[in-house]
Image (cartoon, rainbow, N blue to C red):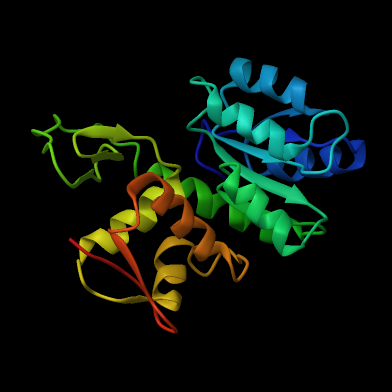
Length: 230
C-alpha cells in the first residue's frame, strides 16, 4: 500500500484511460481525483492539492504542455510533481515536456506495476525534501549558494526557483567542484533505474540551468559528461 495521504490528479481526455488509472491507483491506496481537460485540471489542482499530477499531452483546446506551464506559474501548484503520460514517444515531445517543467515522462501503453513503480520513485525522491528546514544561514552576496535541506538556490544573493530535477542536478555537480560526472553517473543519481528517460534529457536540463546561472559554472567535457567550476 502507498503512504497514506498522497493525492494524485489524473488528467486525460480518454474516459477508458482515466478509469484504468483510477482503479489501479486507488487499489494502491492513493487518493485520486480526475479531470478531462487542461482548464479543469488547473481548477482541480488548486482545490485538490495533489502531490502528483499525471498529465496527458495530447488534449483538445489546452494541451498538456500549456497546462503544465500554467501550473508551474501558479503559486498554489508550482511545486507539485508533474509526470506526462502520453502515447507520444518522440524526443521533441519529451524535450517540450521537460522545458515546461515536467518531472517525468511516461509513455503509453504502460503496465500497472511499472506505473506504480514510477510513481513511488517520484514520490520517494520528493519526500526526502519535505522534512522541517533549519534556519537559513547568511546568504553570500556573490556566487552560488545551495541549501539542500530547504531546497533553495541563490545566485549572487538572489533566490532562484528551480524545478526539482534541475535542483538535484545542480546540487550533484556542485557537491564536488571540478569532478567530471559522467552521463551514466548523472542518470543514476538523478533518475535512477526506475525511470527511463530520453538521450537528450540531461542536455535539456543543463541548458536550462545555464540559462538561469550563466555559462561559467557548468562545463561540458566532450564525450564524458559535465563538471561544476568555481
